[in-house]
Length: 198
Image (cartoon, rainbow, N blue to C red):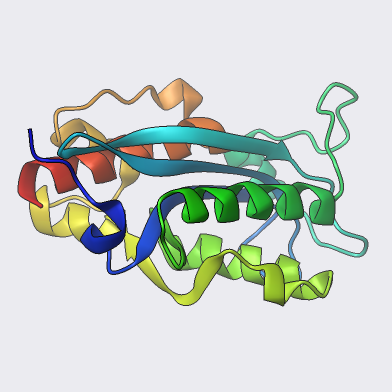
């Protein structure tokens, strides 16, 4: 069996799928409320899902949370059983775990994979700037791998649920807009494209 060298496969970068649930669309003003990340790793000659990290995040002081955003993601920021943690605590822990995976696979850093990936990248980078830790940011700061682009090309769809289904994979609309579910489905979609067409 041929084994994939993930560092060489992605130009020295480790692909990490990310999904952020937020209080709006402005990365500077709106709250980051939930984030999930899944590291993609080799399994023989295939790309598959490795470790996942998931955090409920406390809205940063002065941040905006729109009712429209909450109606989509169904997050209740003040729910007592949400067990949210401070933004810096969550993201620095996630960054440390991702950097450890980069070392394990001999990658220079991670590259963010996402569905509308620049949205997630912007929210994470804005957060690291807020707590003055940009030097610890584990991802490339402007390059991403976007499943919207891949979906438009390979399955003629751009909406995540439709693209996943068009690719022949399962998608439960009832679980959509949970960061953990969306990141898992996005990871499955990206692996499907790489394994089938890569």
